[in-house]
Image (cartoon, rainbow, N blue to C red; front, side):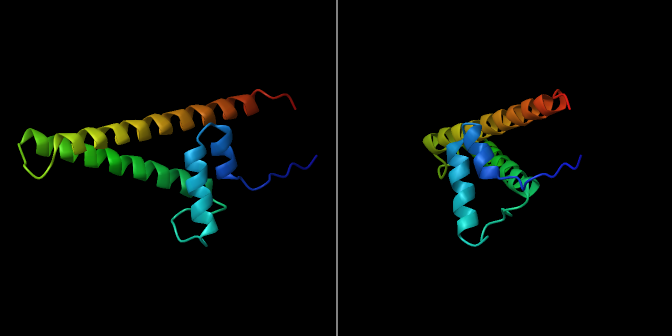
Length: 113
């Protein structure tokens, strides 16, 4: 029995996982002729890009926190709190995506052939 896999559609998987905003961003980037770093056929590239984006948001929030603690007048507390919330939401989204992927992997591994 030959088993052939179809190409993975990250946007569709994100929609099914309840992350419609991520799916829309991926579809927008692929519709613009691959101008972004997301490759239509590479899940690894898309997921890596998402992780890097979350990491940058966390780094920015950490930097802003440090600047507020040092009483930098150019960084406001409000901007810092917003950056922290963005970083937290991004991290929670990545954790949920990871949980969905692990659950899908577990379901596939438990299938009887």
